[in-house]
Image (cartoon, rainbow, N blue to C red):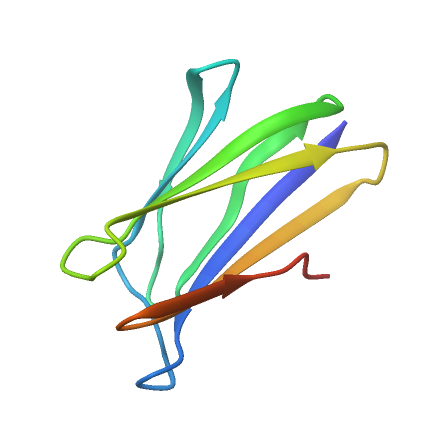
Length: 97
């Protein structure tokens, strides 16, 4: 079983993005929810994930991109970390460590 964590950074300000609602979906159903803390992190959104496809959803209220959904494939590794970097009119993500 794997764990999943995430964080959101506002690269326009160079600061963590506080208070972003994050959810994890499997087959269209929400299986986990969290809100980014003062460091922009949800340290353990999901503590025990079986391999498979999941959708990681960020609710970016008050921004041009209002909602970001990333489809991810969880495999056999024990830890997954997915950061989201946002600016007023752009975003990027990657598989972190």
